[in-house]
Image (cartoon, rainbow, N blue to C red; front, side):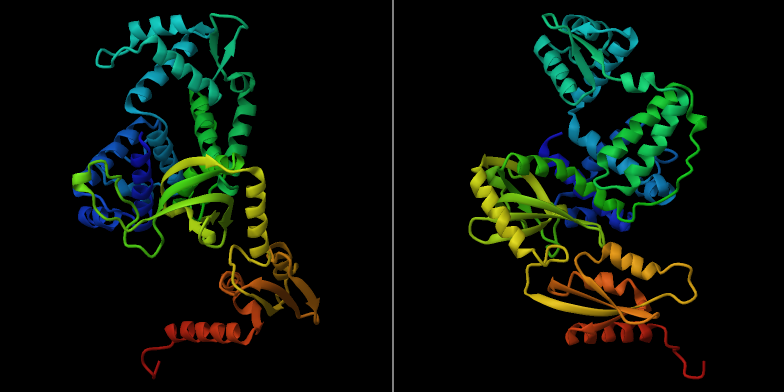
Length: 443
């Protein structure tokens, strides 16, 4: 798939998840910044990808596409990731040719040369698929070797290729099931999780091939609270690569305040139109995850504006640019570290000291309040008061990012300073209290 279509499908799936299909076709198209015709075309493409998944997403393709998010709750993150990566990784011709090459090597169960694979393609591929030439097959084999699906054997030409699935083949049924359970737990509890979900899907297919599907007990039922944000992980690996190679990036950015989340790439100057996105040309420095809201952020340096922050969900049309010297990268990174030295997450405003009193749970076997503060309180310090409470102090850049964490403790946390933050909490709790007041006075 082209990079443009990949961005469009990311935004399409995210909006579908967040609205659960509440928008009409016209509303969807307007929010995405595309035409209704393009919306319908994208939806057809996603349904085609859905039909390639080995297990059904919903009972019948005629069912509304959004229903998979409502009726398959615990599995809903899997299809989204598979949609995303299968739509991104291969063109339509590749999606039919690469599985055929892998199937040919699996059927022979031996190493095959490029010439033997060409003969197998010419003799076995469907008539409606154009026959590939030698250059195309060798390019496919190089790609499959790079991603670790196959391995090259022999030190001289002609090279021979074999499926790289020794790990799965050498595992006993019990070990394969244990590995599946481990991948299932890690994919749902660690970040980033995309690769884990893809491994989990591959292991599930291997289990089915061995006839062990009935042995999958699915003992773990949990939910990634922000599974729509897993879509943002599609951009992580290109960003990590650009950071490792010290390369600048160019992209079109849509901030959360814009009324559009996507814009088609204009190729015909007669039909150019303004977009609500902002062109950015920056040096990526760091990627940060906000577990409180499930958001990914890119921290980067701009030649004019200095350190900038971007929500990864708003990045589209990402392109690598020229690399920068190592010394320049280190200087920019040091500048970022200094500005975020006291950031709870990525805030770069003025430092302020926050003091809060935490109350221990009554008649509880463990002090889970203090345990959580010690675990999540970063560089803050704790001063014991008595058996009932302790005081927590921390210097942070502004109070905006720490507020959700303090608020999550409910009545177990009392903000002492700064005074403005205390007033804000009092106003919030009074507003919440008003929601629960009786409408009639005689109740």
